[in-house]
Length: 217
Image (tube, rainbow, N blue to C red; front, side):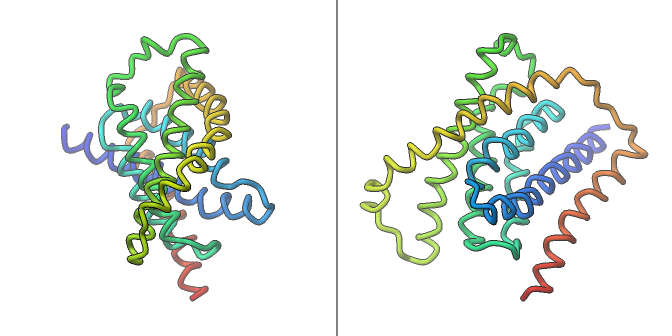
């Protein structure tokens, strides 16, 4: 039974991480092509929706961090946009930061999230910290990977980094309460359908992105 639960959790992590990465590659690129603020929209709406939904369905540690690794890995192979490394690192960092923020919600009784104001507050705080934290981390790790990191540049740009998360916070204040409101929907899928569905969806996401990547190179 324990092994079966672990496999189910891994399958859930895989499908949510794949959907997150696929949306970053496809929808995020589409937003960029339309000159929309893709980073703000992707984190504030899509990332927060996938992260909070997965925490509701799989209330245990490590799922969201694993999702970030999967989504970031898929984003690294995205043939549709530039700066693959920095985007992948940002996504991985976002999964880790969300995990730390929501660390105490494994039982997910929502005792403190019954009111709309509390739901909006956790949405604003989570989205802001996830986005800004991921942004700052990638501004450190990406230059380090090229041996060109200068800490004085980081400090000089810090006010801009901190201000960049305000719009994301507002979006998170909308998306997270919606997800928390919909948590009462009964979501059960029999094992005979669960595993084929998760494998099929995840496989489609990875084959679509990585397959096109190798076609483009």
